Amino acid sequence: MKEDYTKYTSKELLDDDYFIHSMIQPTPESIEFWNSLIINDVVDYEEFKKAEAFVLLMRRPKKIMTAKERNEMWINIEIRNKQNLRKNIRKKQLYLWGAVASFFLVLSALSFFFYKQTMPVTLDFQEIMAGMQDVAESKDIQLILSDNKTIELEETSVEIEVNKEGEVLVNSKQMAVNSKQMAETVAPEKEEEISYNQLIVPLGRHSRLTLPDGTKMHINAGTKVIFPDRFKKKEREIFVDGEVYLEVAENKKVPFFVHTATMDVKVLGTVFNIRAYKEDKDQEVVLVTGSVQVTTKDKHEAMLSPNQKLGYSEGKCHISGINAHDYVSWINGYFIYKKEPLLNIMKHISRYYGIEVVCGEKINSLTCSGKLDLKENLDIVMKDLAQILTLEIKKNENTYHIN
Image (cartoon, rainbow, N blue to C red; front, top):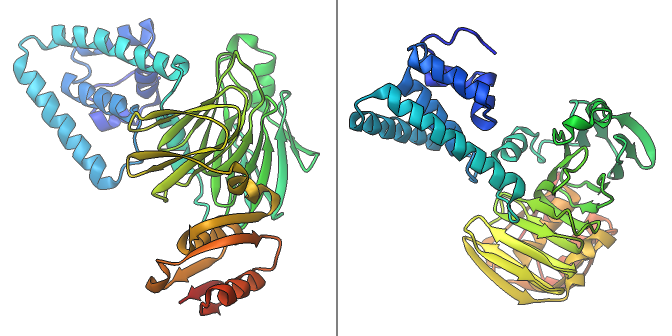
């Protein structure tokens, strides 16, 4: 904690770890500390409120902002704070009331995050995800532990397990022991201080992951996952950007949440598939067994039964009856399609094999049905598709051009 905050600007406050921590996890001591700085004119009230407003706004569920959007947010915050200042005569008294209100607002937000049954995507996950290496730039599967140790795996497909003792096993071989996890194991008073690991599965690679509670995941190509060293007492949660198939370990007292950029899925113990690549406008949840509750960022809520699919696109939801087996067949090494647009098939192939596919405009209307064996050599797969659909497919280095 810095001792001298004299005339700090809002941007300097946002660069200060103690200020950020005070806004997100306020304590009576931190509230009293900032109150005293405002009352004694050590910190400028207007700058403080701008920084505080920025932190609270960033805590809301939202997409990662562009530079233009961030600038617009700053302008709006400045305008709003100037308007508030004109309406109030006694600045210091207003701050005291504002500090109390902010304290309860943040506590309410934290309570909502930790205990509400359908929890929103949090900024913490979004920030970590934004800082992770792009799957298009990755060559190897990367497991980044909460103590910042990185394990790079060259295999095309690997099996990873993080057990309750903090041991990390890759293909049944112990690779590391997470020091943070072990430290918390012997300090039960810090049980709620959860640390998170990051898994990057690039294009053309696949992984299986066993979580500390026994939940098993199949992770498709081009996917990022954030998961904890161990789960909290009252809920289990992970964050996904991409496609995963989950067999959630049943625990009726501790619900399991899968957060994506657009959806939250709550389960108690079930098997389902979620496809939610942030670059795709069409996303979906497919239920195999059990039941799940889906809440979108637009506050649409739905309960799914086995062999139902929730499709979400451009703010609209649609639930349909399907054969769930067709949608999860990728975990067994093949795709099953029924009148699927060819553009979607090529997108799946591109991710699974880690190659680029460029499609001509005239294939937009084509659909395809059948079984696609992913164990086959890619050149054979593309040749078969060309013959069945009367396509012209040309290969240029690592790119396929289809007309």
